Image (tube, rainbow, N blue to C red):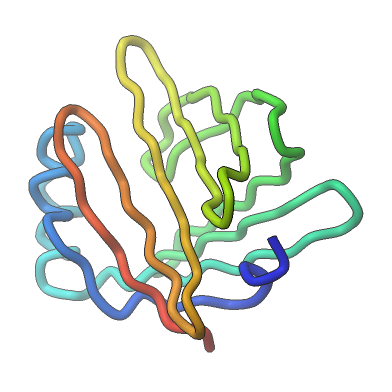
Amino acid sequence: MSQFIGKWKAVGNENLDELFKACGVDEEMRSKAKEGLIQPIQEINIKGDEYSIKTTVGHLSTEVCFKLGVTFPSSSMDGKKIMVTYNMNGDTLEEVQKYGDYEAVISRKVTGDELVSTITGQGKTATICYKRI
């Protein structure tokens, strides 16, 4: 898990608009993502057996603190109340988000100074590539 520690800035994405559309993200947010105006920064830290991921997108910021394998209530960036579980699967950090009938899986993997998040939900898959900063 130590390879994830640090600050990461999004440098590109693939198929994000299709995923956002399928997940009901509003047109304004989708438009900003298409224009490259949304470049999330994620900061990942570990203290003992507790982990944190702070995500900043423009003026919006969220932080989740979690223990692996423990499901907890949280909120998505657009304010939805969700249940979240994180687990390590080999060298991949997997996050499962659930609300209602919806489920999304975010798989994060680090190779060198690059972190790739693969997001799957509503039958669509997208990737966001981050560089360590």
